[in-house]
Image (cartoon, rainbow, N blue to C red; front, side, top):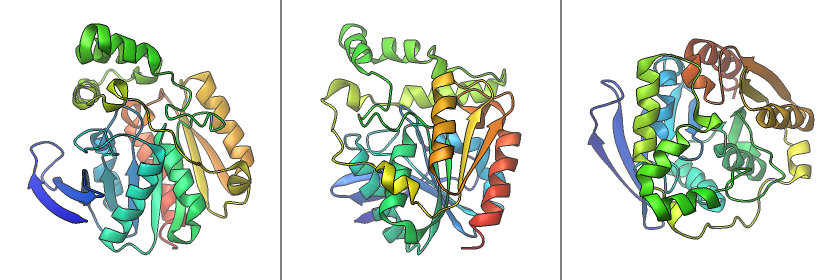
Length: 279
C-alpha cells in the first residue's frame, strides 16, 4: 500500500487530493480538519466531491476523510461491495485510525453497514443517508443498470450522463447554481466502469441478524422529497437497528446534503458530537 499527494484546484484552500494504492489499484481520498475521525462514503455514479457542502462545517470538530470508491471519480478499479469494504479497512489502517465514524450515502450504505457489522469495535457510530432496500443484494441496490448499459452501447457515456441527470434520484430541489454545477461536474467524471464491464457480485453483505444485533448508534436520514421507496427502506431499517434515530431533511430530495446543506450539517454535527466524540 503506497500513498501520494497532489494539489487540486477545487474544494477550497485546504483540499488536497491524496492517493493510496490498495491491491494494485490507486484510490483517491481527501483528509481535512482535526478531531475524531469521520469517513464519508458516497453513492453510485458520485465521488468524494459530493460532500463539498459538508466539509467546512464538519471539519471544525472532526477529521473529515472522503474516499472515491473504487471505480468512481478518480479512483481506479472495478466497483464492487467486497472491494469497498476492503478499501475502507485498508484506508483505516493506512491512516492509523483506531476508531472512526462513518457516513454512507445511498449505495455506499451497503459498504458502510457491512464494514460496521464485521468490525463494530473500530466504529463509533453511523449516519445512513437515503438507504436502498438492503434485501436486494445485487451490486446496483434496487437500480437496474441494464438500460444504462444499453444506452452506453448505443449512445456513449454522454447520452447516459444526460439521461441519468434527469433521473428522480439525481433531481435537486435547490435552485442553487453552485450545487447544480457541482452535481453535473461529478457525473461528468463518472467513468462508467460498471456500465461497460460485467458487474462484480458481492460474496456477502450485512445479514439481517447482524443488523439486528449491531451495537452502534445510527442516524438514518432521508430528504423530505426523497423517493417513496427510499423513505420506506429508511423506516424499515430504523425499526431493524436497535439504536437507530430517524430524521428528515426539510426541502431535500435524495441528495439532501446538496439541497439543504445547512439543515443536513446541523443534524449530522449534533449526532456526531453526541456519539463520535465520546468514542
